[in-house]
Image (cartoon, rainbow, N blue to C red; front, side, top):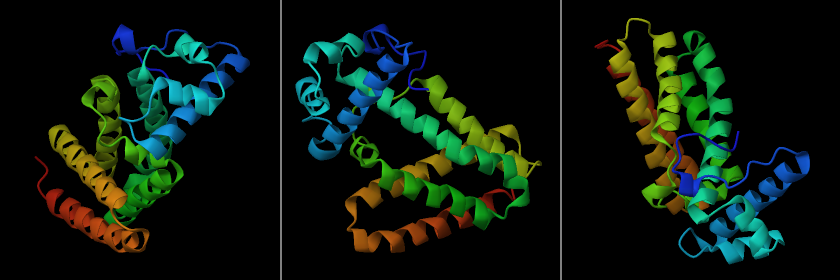
Length: 209
C-alpha cells in the first residue's frame, strides 16, 4: 500500500486513485520522483523536475500530490511495505533459525533492497517532515520485536522492543555507510556489520529483561 493514515492533511495525497489507470499514473509519478531524487538529491528535486521526468504536466502531478513532502512520504511508505514483505518471513521462521541466519537474512535483504532502490539511500538525510507516521514506524518495530520473541520466548516484551530499536538503528547506520563507500569496499563492511549485529544479539538475549 502506498498511502498511510496519520499524515498531516497538507501532505496526504489529494486524490486516491481507484481505477487501474489512475494507480498506474501515481506509480509512474513515484518512479519519476525516485529517479529524480536518486540523480539530483532530495533538496534539488522539484515538483517541476519530477513532472518533466515523468512526462506529465505539473497540474497532473499536483492533482495527486500537494507538495514534494507528500511524494516522498508515499515513496517511503512503498519502501516500508516492501521491507515488511522481505522481513516478515524472518519473524515467522525465526524460531528455527540461528542468530547468524537471522542477521544474514536481514542484512542481505537490505543490501538487495538498497541496490534496487538507490533513491532510498538518497533520502536518508531528508528532513524529518518527510518521515512516515509514528504508528507506521512502530508497526515495523513490533514486527522485528516479534522475531526476537519467537527466537527467544523468555525475553520480556520491553527487551524485545529495545533490541528491535537497536537492530533498526544498526541497519540504518549500515545504509549510511554503504551509501558513502566505494562499491569495491561495500562487501567487506557489510560483513563487519553482520558480525557486529550477531555478537550484540547473542550477548543481549542472555539477559531477558
